[in-house]
Amino acid sequence: MNNENTLNLPIKYLRPLVTQYNQIADSSNWNRFTTIPTEGLNPDSISDGQKEAIAFCTFIEDHTPRYIEDYRKRFPIGEEVGIERSISNRELFHFLVRWGVEEDRHAQALAVYQVRSGIVRNQESLEEELIRENVKEFHLGFAEPVQVFTYTFLQEKATQIYYQCLAKAVKEPVLKTLLLYLAKDESRHFSFFTGVLDAFIACYGKRVLPLIQEVAGNYRMPLFSTLPDYARRAIRMAREAPGYSRKMPIQILAAHLESLSAHMPEWARDLRETSRNILLQNNLLKN
Image (cartoon, rainbow, N blue to C red; front, side, top):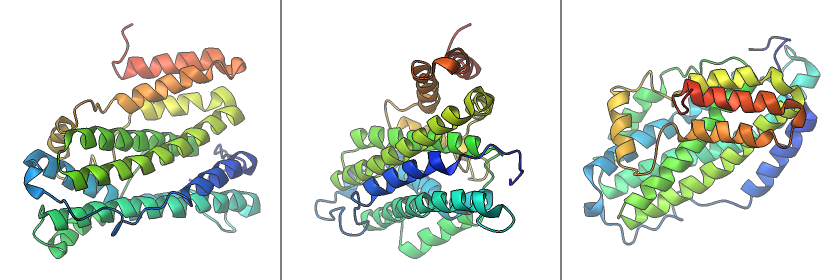
């Protein structure tokens, strides 16, 4: 993970992105316990499918300790990586801790909702179920920093779109409010990772494009290999959110690379080619 040949993002690119994110985040707080109203809660209006979707999302969000652990291993602060890398990784940590707080807030807010709405018997049984998944290792499957950020670009966009689509479908007012708060957070996360991806391309040009394409060709949401009955549950989850497609984030990534070609003329041809290849390998474009 700390190979000297790894393409790391210099501090001059990273610091403005982290600063901008935290400036916005510091003014975007909501309280997981008190902001979401309890009055008006109508559990009878939640379908069984929607209950299962919320449970599924809670598992994904609750794995936050493993996501943060993975990032800390990849971007360490210490003598083993030297002063320059440590400064850059320390800057990233300013984002990481805030991101972790917000993702953990999502997990706990969804868990609290499940308890208050009666989806689960009690908090203790839910916590035991969640921790059985939380103790499992998380393996991203990609080594380069730009691939880590590309993966999270896709993940954050997927969750944002899903929460928005599910919010449109649910009738239960408290759940609808909660989902819109989650989507707003995920939108800010996505914007940060978009900026990081752009910075990598501005810094390294076409060298990073095959790495980005590799992620797009092998992308799976977290826990797909560890959560029991993942495939069936993911299909049912998607059905509860009309308008959502698991390939939408891939399409957005391809479109974003295409749009960059107008601003980066020296890499325009490579960006357009990578965009097309991503669509082709995901069966989103005919030859």
